[in-house]
Length: 154
Image (cartoon, rainbow, N blue to C red; front, side, top):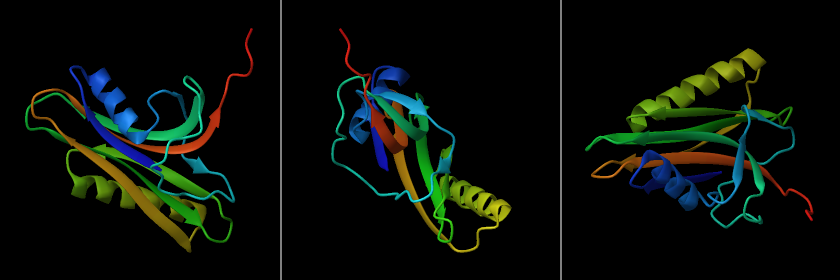
């Protein structure tokens, strides 16, 4: 689990800066839906991924950006892992406030767990925020599953 926020002269460059802070800017993000495979472990990470420039990163992504002076954005992922089956789910949300973001994450996790009949779960969240002063900003949360190269070329 990685988070980042960034600023740039455009929303796209702010997104890139946020990905850079999260340590995944030089990878091709392949976004997945939100199912955590059985026997997986969710950990907070800050060290660089073992990857080459342009490798594919299978991930779940939450992001939000802002361009208006004074605007604040929050992006976050929540997760729940069923202790019995060891399978789990991620939920991705973004909001203009931390309180609303965390509430949406909690409500979504409650619904997804209830619909699966999970009662004994381990949960967590990772959130990022960005405050627009002059230039566009972006906040991201990334759940990195696996880095995959492109194989030998040439």
